Amino acid sequence: MNTFLNSFINTLSWLYQMISFQTNWYENYFWGLILISLIVWSLEILFPWRKQQSIFRQDFWLDGFYMFFNFFLFSIFISGFYAIFSNLLAFVGLSTNSLAVVDLKNLAPFTQLLIFFVLSDFFQWFTHVMLHRFDALWSFHQVHHSVKEMGFAAHLRYHWIENILYKPLKTLAIMLLGGFEPEQAYLVHFIAISIGHLNHSNLNITWGPLKYIFNNPVMHLYHHAYHLPKDKKYGVNFGISLSLWDYIFRTNYIPKVDKNELLGFKGDDKVPSTFWKQLWVGFKN
Image (tube, rainbow, N blue to C red; front, side, top):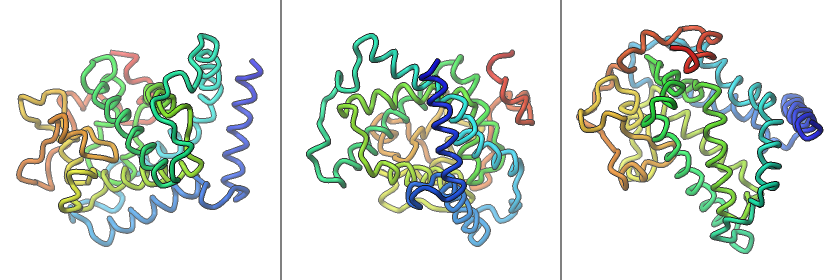
């Protein structure tokens, strides 16, 4: 109980310190998220790919609320459970060093960040594939795919259960690194958030030859496409920040690009349109 309460209080204090500018500016996720969102939204307004799409696109405010709910409000609620999970790992003898395959501590800072970024992204890609492949997991992930118009804030419209599903494999990634998370890991998180915002944005960006490494809005548009190839019934383009996993494991798919591609999935009309009702999607038929 002490572990749970202390973690809850510490997370609440962390959020307050960010909102009140009591943290280092480069570690302030709250205002950093707002700044990144404003930058990408401004690019959407200045250089829209789908020009007929409204600045305040369909579900704009719903997705905007999801950003703060999933990134901060839910983090406060779930923090105590994460702390208990860490204690349970230690109780059964799974220390953060028990699965270590590489020691980052003696590497250059840039190399530490690069390895942390690549390994974390792979485990997120793998989790994302599982969300599509298994019906029980898809029942939650469908909230994210109920988006009908792409925009930066759609990045963080996802069911709260996904916060829990992604955590164990991310923890595994850190355990493989000897329990080490680089001191400058906040840079990786900010970069990942920025790429995620761009991937869901109303922008025509492909990165040219770098498209085989980095995910992009054109590629991710087809991840949300209503119509998919018959041989890829579970989905395509699962990349989070990096597209290279899709090219390596042949889950990539980019046909002749149609910027007005219909989005969603068969049965998406059954997904409720309000935040409160979407909280319970996956628990009810």
